[in-house]
Image (tube, rainbow, N blue to C red; front, side):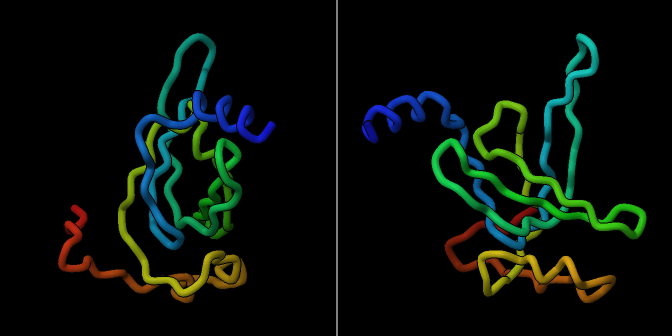
Length: 123
């Protein structure tokens, strides 16, 4: 049974791999259908969490809009998610950044992670 489930999931996986980590500031490009037209909408914020595995893997992005915190969860392998562009990397020490929900203003800043010798710097 497990082998059969794995085989079905293989067909649904994303072809291009999205590489980002917890704490990264990202732009999530989502496909929006308006009538018969399709457009791309960008949701930018900090990645708070990744959870699940396989086709059920999700990630949560948080941003501040008009002084109010807005969180949105995206399925990683969904065809609605066109792209995830990493704007900056942050140095974090935990897997879930839910503590950022209680923080306001400058307290929500995360320290930037420097690129290692082998890694390429981000533009």
